[in-house]
Image: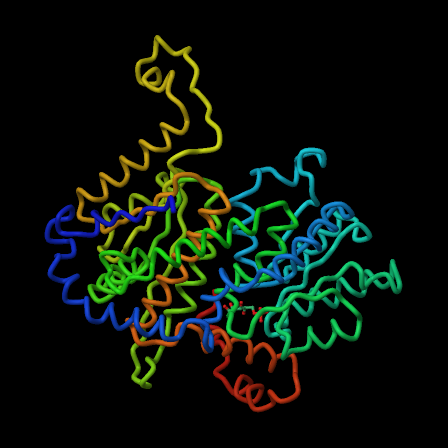
Length: 464
Ligand code: PA5
């Protein structure tokens, strides 16, 4: 496994009195061991089916690969319709592992369909998509575990209507459903219409689903080696089997964040120094926020815990957010994602000998610049007592991305256990969904509608 976690800069050793003492880590040892025990005891059970994803999918992988091969030969566009956990993983993995301008490449170089993920219901965005794709040469992958999400089901209805108008009975060949086998509307529609279908196991929740068919089918369609992704996840899982945080990187990261939260560090920044990892930070934001941001713990006590995730990009955000990180409140933990070896490089040419302030760059490469800027930012933050750690990948490939996703999922599960919260529900999201149903007059939500209608009206004096 070529992923390393370096947490020197979380510790008093590097940060002085702003850091965590070895003794503080040791004090958490028993709690960390019991979090590890709980997560292991739940492996594969209830909502921890995601821990089986790296191991038990050989048949699914075979059929995903067969479908992907067919789509790669026959269609021009592949569009994912989904939201939240049913979209962020496919976006993150595609961006990490494919050419930065994949859709603009000629087909000969792409060797597969163009790839789009529509994870919103902005009408302009959907209409804009229809301006650039020919639906007759497109396969739409409708992904919703619950088969009930209004946004995804609306997209499905719009697309299906359009396909039926253009293609009649052949419309069904342009939809692939990825959903729960046992519940929801999409599975019923899929059976009625005869769509090809992949199943999301019951124990795999949306934000933990990238290594299930949710992420594996889109990845395979764009030519990503999904077996290597799963192998990376498997190897990371084996690397994280120890109950001691000193030997288990996911547990160490959970303990460090747990102590940081107790110290009032309520913001968790993820800052990749590589454009292709930008959306890993997006995916992680959902994972961390939705899993840990909870009002009550498992015993029903009001705890209001969680960290606010912030996405940043190195070096771009050095010129926007890093000022705050260096001099603002001590309320953040910054997780850098470092790539040791880029796939290519560019040398900054000579030509500025008369301008020493620019000339010092000449002859160096952009990857050197990237590495030095990361080093320099980390150094400056550490000198000012700002907590940070680094996850380094020797290179960005399918194996390491599978490992990274699994590492972060495991960190989240351990952190949930340490905080004693249910990391797998999202009552706060359901509240908003119910209110939206009520606003649309959905049957069964009459009392919610009544509640909304009786809420305080906006006062004119507060509207300018
Ligand atoms: O993590 C989760 O479970 C959620 O964010 C879901 O992924 C999101 O709400 C979409 O749900 P579904 O896949 O059921 O459409």
